Image (cartoon, rainbow, N blue to C red; front, top):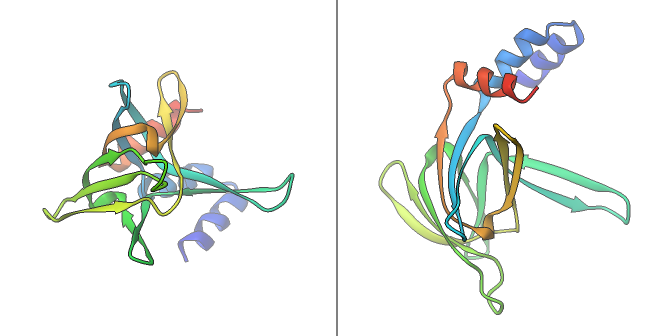
Length: 156
């Protein structure tokens, strides 16, 4: 329903309303520390990966949840529920990184990443893309609608 409304507004030439509606959806800021100890702040943070269909075709994916494995199941932990993530680097024999995820409600657990993904977002200097395996800590903050619009207008 929301997608139909946004498409209608876009087709009818109401980009201002579309921008505000999109800003209200799920814009997050991520504060990170990488393996070198460098701290970064990413506005409009999301996770990204590409599926390769053939030699020249890739399908990009951008999400605001963390795909982790719990047994054989894939679980998607929403950014808005996450308080803090500690990333343990993957080992050659075990594959992807392991995430110790602390939730806003006080619960926590350790899970392997379901797939290799990168955290992407915007900084004052341009877009940042860093593999999650190269990070050590991630803290997500949900932006207010005004912060979201300001963040989107900085990148244009």
